[in-house]
Amino acid sequence: MAGNEKKAINSKTKDGSATKGNEMSFLQHLEELRWHLVRASAAVMVAGIVVFLNKQFVFDKVILAPRDPGFVTNRFFGWLAVQLNSPDLAINTKPFQLINIDLSGQFSIHLNLAIIGGIIISIPYILWEFWRFVRPALYENERKHVTSAVVYSSLLFIMGICFGYFMIVPLTTHFFGSYQVSQEVLNQINLTSYISSVNTIVLGSGIVFELPIVMFFLAKVGLAGSSFFKTYRKHAFILLLCLAAIITPPDAFSMLLVTGPLALLYELGVFMARMVEKKRNNIDLLEP
Picture 1 (cartoon, rainbow, N blue to C red):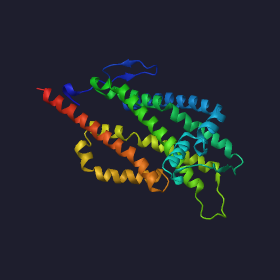
Picture 2: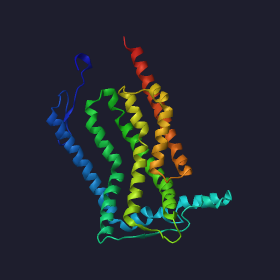
Picture 3: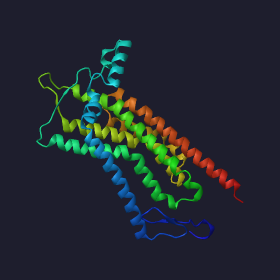
Picture 4: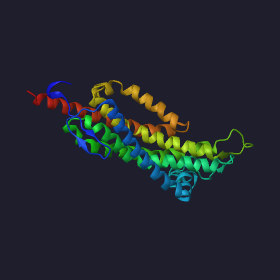
């Protein structure tokens, strides 16, 4: 970029110090990215070790809990079934049996879960390292929003994780754990299958909840605006329904239960895009 619009790039050294006014070469960018990835990986490793060492709590109190009748969501649906006199609303009244059929299966699951748990716990720091990498390319008035972006992105991800864990996982375990093609066939769920389903649902929900942030930055860089999102709102809702059908059991109640929050997130993204445009228009009016 030429003239007054050219950005000043901060080139950072390994110890985090910055030299202002110097543009970084491609190799310097790669070196900088490498150190951000190293720090993020170290955070994941430390968090993963903590998860690995707390095996009993992680598995008994967290991972396997949604299939237990005493789980908070299961108790809520049981209470709702009594209040509405609808026994079908009660879920996970009888926990299904989990089995392991691989010699090293339980150890492999323990190790993989420690890595995934480390990633989930470290997400705020990972996002912070990402924003530290892109921060030098931002204008000075944009850099003050880096902390807010990390906070909001982390909160949305955590909200998605909680929604997936407390809402979708119990419904999924109830549907598939109790589904039978015949009374002659018993459900003995493989532990690997159960853990894989839980991880997919929880991580998928966390990523999907970042939708407003994605829409915000699409508006920020000018690729899409609030009018675009409004025009294709119906198309977006159809896609959200399809997404909800993928990450939930194949029943209408679960799908609608998940689609509701996704629709609200989309509307939040539209609102954020409108705020970006409003701020940009105000700046254009102030410029001579």
